[in-house]
Length: 546
Image (tube, rainbow, N blue to C red; front, side, top):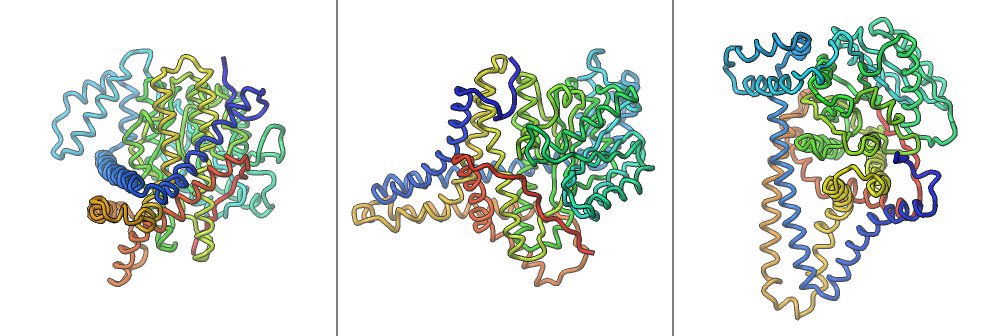
């Protein structure tokens, strides 16, 4: 039975399950926080043990994230000098090229040797005739860029970066998914950009999405879906098979490198089940990172690090922000969700349920760059960051839909259902609670304890436990700072030694950031979902400083 990935038009049983799973994450988070506070007052000894367990779990998670952050960076370093265009041209003559690769002289550096080993493995996976891809000259790229209020300078930088993929640019069709409710100045700016760059691509389309279509909410997915359907008509008129089209849905501020689409084409060609896969690059929030306040720089560096870590576990990887997939698959499953805010992760879960578990996310060894939120003032940026993180945390809206889907989809293995459900649930609850527990709730047992607890061994040992745990956390933090220095783009202007030290000390804002710009927005989103207070799509403030 096909599952409709939506909360609309449900019968009584479905609505009961939908509301139950909508309430569950928020109720669990609030119960955990308030329960620990109550436990700290009435049973401080038990509460102290629970808090220490939370701290140990936090340290283990930090070390896990740090280790896999470095693993991901090393994997990325393997491919830093890869000629992706030469590889896809080689796959066009697969048998001879594979034989050449097996007898190629040994490279001098270990990164190149590892890259070649991975490359040979990729080619061997597609040698059977049923897995062989179309010729690279017959593969087309559809780039959908939704626009509603973005500055022309922001969008033009994105389009220019796509055009920098010069060799493949004649196989790229760009579509501006332009909201009909956008201001006329925005529409005029987008049409000017389309006219300016049309000659550098196979084609450049502008699809104006009417406001208020039946069944749609005011969300990016509805806009992108309208543009996708317009592109489908375009391909049908030119008899271009959907099987040969890769669609990339980019945020308006997405900037890619000159070999991005060659790398994406390679990943598509070497994936045996290419029509049951999404392709996820590593988003880095670097476009304007030296132009924003320090706290914004730290929180978005943390967001980039998290995406680095996620790519090390493809079995649990979910699409985020700008990503790509087979256009054939997109059409088969009915395009992006048109009534959800979190369409980027929603499209993965919609595909996963539609294809009954036979769907994966392939991590790309490639980064793309995006903007850090910048509202033009310190306080405005704080507010905008809070709203952005709350919108990201609203991805919890996928949880009830996925759980309902798991209940009716029989072909997905039970273990896979449990694994995915646990990751979603634990991830959202930890996001909303762990920073509060570590920063505030953990001190309540010490403050509220009476003589019964203050005379115990645990009371005197708790300080040492806490000191050791935070010492280990600091060690991991220094590892994270080192990685940030390795990944941050070069400054456009030179800083004095004083300001260099200030930028290093920005990372000690992490406790403030984790509570007020991470956990609090997550708890806010879960509470709204629990109370059935639906959010509207909010577009982050992005700007360019000339």
